[in-house]
Image 1 (spheres, rainbow, N blue to C red):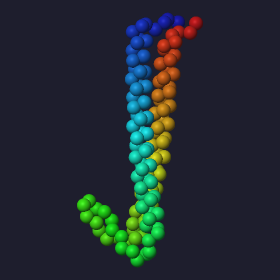
Image 2: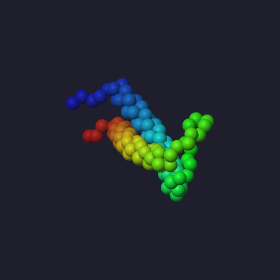
Image 3: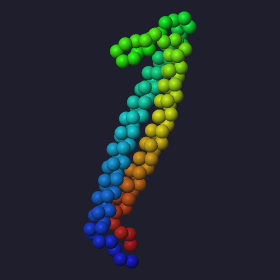
Image 4: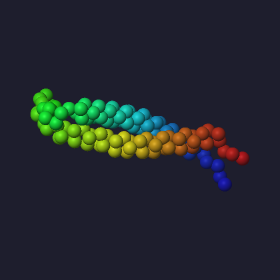
Length: 121
């Protein structure tokens, strides 16, 4: 069995290093996206709770751009319930993505350690 040349080992090392860095960056990006979705969910949940405490005949207004349009209370409640479920689905998908990128980073890190330890005899 022939040993790999130094140039080949260097090239593989550089590729693995780039993959590791990219994976780490993706993990950080996905974590930020998860935190943003969690904030959105929390705001929608708090708003929905406040709407639940209102009487059915209360006038409610939906913000649209710079103006507010009167909207039935039931529509407003439904809008926030939908926002909560959408945020939950997004968070689940982002968590799957985060696990994938963490696994890719740990695989690349393990391969880098193997290269740095050199051939085993």
